[in-house]
Image 1 (cartoon, rainbow, N blue to C red):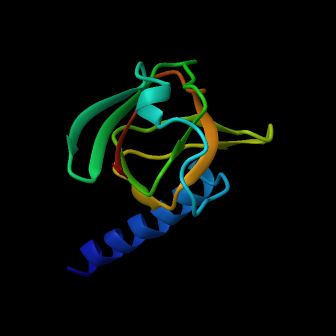
Image 2: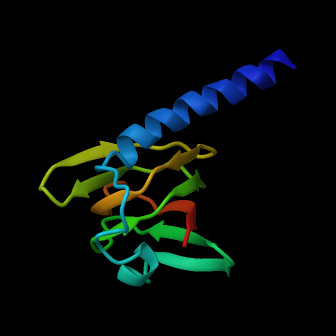
Length: 131
């Protein structure tokens, strides 16, 4: 039992690190400043469920693929497979992130950014957003 608790704690710590590195764009308290991800890049973000006040998407970036500028309201995510991503911010800054499969995270709203797969394989993340 303690091993499971430690594992869950480790995932929470890892999720916090991912939140800081993968989605560390400036947070906002107002409405998004760019289109929603699924509207900006329907080739990357596929809506797999849409009901009430929530949307669930499967985001899949092929190697070398980048999405278009977008923003997010409150969101959560689950990393399906190991990834190597570069997150670009509207001000020209960028950061690299290597989220691992099985990682779950939550994030406050995120202003304009776009994501690029800098790895050699597809990157898949399930994203849960409020409307």
